[in-house]
Length: 317
Image (cartoon, rainbow, N blue to C red; front, side, top):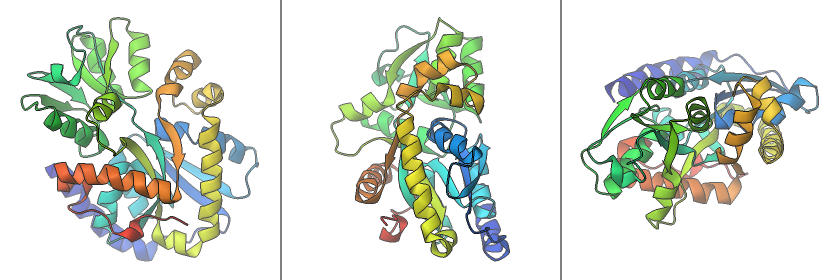
C-alpha cells in the first residue's frame, strides 16, 4: 500500500505538469491505452479494422502489463482514453481532482481461483491458506479482500506478484500452490499444466452473497480535457468499442493471437467465453459502476480513493 500511495504522490505531480505540457492530439487521432488481457481482447476487432483503414478516426494503441504504468501514461498525456481496473478509475478521479471521466464498463468478473489442491473448492477453503495473485491496490486485491471479509475468513495470507505471468510461474513450479488469476491467464495455466484446475470463480462467490451490485473488473476512462475538446471523437470511439466488444462473441481467437494477447488459438478459444468482455454505457454503466464502487467503499474507502466519485465522473452522453 505504501508503494501505491508513493506512486500517486508522484502521479499527481506528473499530472499537474502534463496538464500544461500535453501535446495537442491531431484531429481524428485517438490514442488508446489498455492492459494486456481481457480489456484488450475486447478491442482487437477495432484494432484490426483501424489497421486496415476501416474506421473514421485514426487510432494509436498502447498496451501495458501493469495498471500503474497505464495510469502514468494517462497522467503524462501519452494516451487520451484508457481501459483500467474499475476501482483505479475512481482513485484516478480523486487524485486528479476530477480530470478523468468513465465512459463505459468493458469487463465483468474474470477472476478465478486456480490450484492443484483438490481440497480447495470454494472461497471458504482459503481459511488458513496463502493465495498468490497480481493486482495489488487494484480490482483483484480489493475484490478478494471484500469476499474474504464477507465470508468471515480472517487468516488468509495474500502474496503479490507484479504480473499474471509471474503468478502462473509459481503454479508451474508447485501446482499445490493456490492462486487467483484473471482470464485468459487462468485458462492458459491449466492448459499448460493438467495438474491445475479452476477451483471456483470469484464472480460466483460474489453472486452467492445475494447483493444487487454486479462484480466488475474493467472500465474505460477518458481525459476530461480530451473529452471537452473532441466530444464527437469520443462518441465515435464509444460506438467503435461497442462494435468491437460485440465481435468478441464471434470468432476473434486469430486476432487475439495475432496481437500477442494469447500465444495459441486453442487457449484463446477456450478462454474467450470466460473473459467477461462486455460493453455498458450511459445509465446502465453508471448504475453498474456506482453499485460496485459502493460495495468496495463500504469495505475499504481507500480502495476507491477515500470517497465515492461525484456525478461528473460518469459520462452518460
